[in-house]
Length: 483
Image (tube, rainbow, N blue to C red; front, side, top):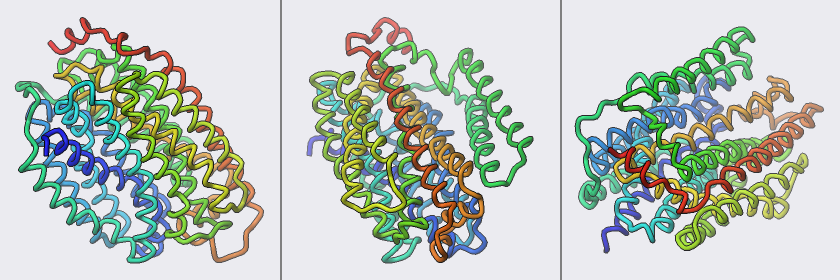
């Protein structure tokens, strides 16, 4: 098999597995809460978000490490760590243990995410990168959606631990495959330094902001402590930006944002993640909640239309972007997703599979149409020596957008639903009694969230349209960055 297809096959498997585990836990949370002793609602939130948070925090510096020591070598190492983390997760006996082992998984996922796009870009010519990156990007987005379906099936039929068992044989085989078949095509840049201060300030900033939201929303923190954490996070982030602009080897090479295609594509992908992250989060607890009362298996099946439509349109839009560029196609994808979100904002207390098909097809199709061209646009705009860090920066923005979207969703629901009842939904204990008046507030909060997501997608259209086309690349600046 031609080498480029070997690269695409292995990296797509890697990103699919790591993105699957972003959401495969989500649909299993009520079951995990019932079966792990003394698991709290705060534990559940951090079982879900800790994985993505750690991935976002270290991903860019892992991209820098890969530029220094070899993308293939560290990508393969990431597969091994991810597989080991999955095995540990399956053995967890308490909520805090599962949080810790999910962090190990997150380290492995960060190596996979930070290198897959760069390895593909090295292996494929520019005329085929849109198609190749499109397939890989679809694996990322489809994995995060399909994880809900697979997680529901496995949890209902075998048990929640099986969602981690499945990674072990696949991960071992893929690690061996990557070690023996992938070749290093990148130019290794020795002598660079890891931006420790930048990494710590960035991780601290997003952790404090997310902790402020979740601790306050669950009643685990006072208003004063919440404001203290929020202000601390904002100050740390401002310090991060100030330092990065002056650092010799920055974690975020902010000079890349002077490239119009790079800046616009990354802003669009961040806003898209901020909008869509809340959707699956909300639908999972709506479908298993007090009015629908579906088991994880059936709830997962309800979400199949999103996965199918996304997987269908992703490769097609990638090929079209190779020919026509990313601006028009990515913008169409955002509009299509926005229509789907607006339809979902009219959900009632109960719904049927047939009623959900059309809005979910719109949401999935829009995600697929947007993801491939936008990712190709970002990677094509980056100078070759910077592709490792560029891939890491882009994936970081996706992860940050997703975790803040989930934090936003929980906060909005906590403003409308009494915490006792909201905890019952998350802990899977709300289905035994009669539906109370508070359920109307729960449904209203879902409406608010889908309207907010629609608005965010409409805002994302602006950078998508203003990105320009391939001729917008500033090649002299790109050359200057790579020196």
